[in-house]
Length: 151
Image 1 (cartoon, rainbow, N blue to C red):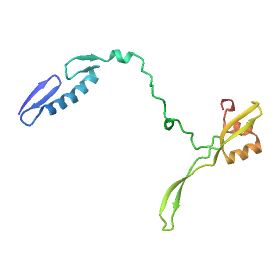
Image 2 (image 1 turned 60 degrees about the vertical axis):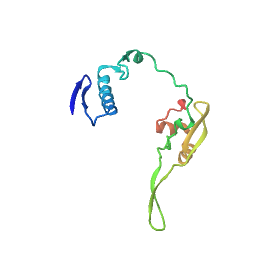
Image 3 (image 1 turned 45 degrees about the horizontal axis):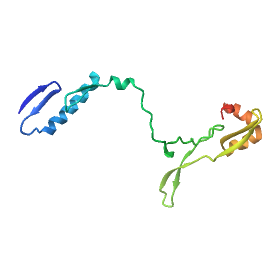
Image 4 (image 1 turned 120 degrees about the vertical axis):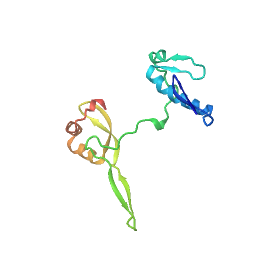
């Protein structure tokens, strides 16, 4: 077997080496060198295509609409009390433990904000709703550090 050193590195030529093996070695070496130099080397025709033109142009907008599954999901945390889900064990009769989550009882609630003279729609735990009814929305929001004008 003989070794031929080309611009892209050593290539093994012999009875065992086929054209597909040589092509795969060429493609692996050229991808490494093209990233270092900054241009793409076409392996089929040997033409060098510059990527500087493509990098300067603005990215094309995505024309496909967003699917509902890609929409952001609200966290299961109460912003006023800081309550969040609890990890627990579900224990069967045979004492087999399965890890489950105990989620906070979060409710969407429209509450009248006296200082803003409007309703504010909030996602609160039931404990926070009771606290707001007792102390008032402004006092609870101030204690939690929440700006109601953004809601």
